[in-house]
Amino acid sequence: MARTAKQLIPALLLALILAGAGQTEAWAGLYACTDNQGRIHYTNVANWSTCRPLNLRPNKAATPALNNNSSTAPYDREITRAGYLYGLDPRLIRAVIQTESNFNPQALSPKGAQGLMQLMPATARELKVDNSFDPWQNIAGGSRYLKELLSRFDNQLSLALAAYNAGAGRVEETGAIPEITETQNYVRNVLKYYRQLQQEAVAVPLSLNQ
Image (cartoon, rainbow, N blue to C red):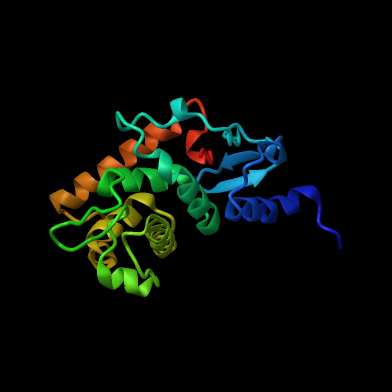
């Protein structure tokens, strides 16, 4: 049975993302819609109130105002690509990066966590990340790990974020955010940045600005 145009969009979208699509005309009439679990759906029919047109035109002024500089701009493409590949809202990935490293690809924590999404070496090995300081490998690995945690904790975002910070074992022991100040602040900050991005009038986190 021939696939409809709507069914073809995910495959087309991924192909253009991987190819670094530079022709915005091909994207006319496409929308990114967020469901109530924060998942992104790409479609040519804007039938939800959360649907926003994909903004692919270079627009430096549209960079999210979480920082007072343009440090997030170089990773728009990687964040959007990872969001598509792993079924995550790119705005959530961006909020995690903001909290973890403030968009510093060379960030190194005292505990040894590395890169934009602060992957521990052992976790990076499990995720097949060869170089945690490579922006795409780090974002892809961190996004995959976050997606696994969301599945593990029944899509309860606060628990998945707590597990990302403190480890899944600690969260499973109590079924709640551990009473660890660092972890509680971490979850609070990610959710704060995520809400800010969700309230943006323009769907900037879904853009592929160059």
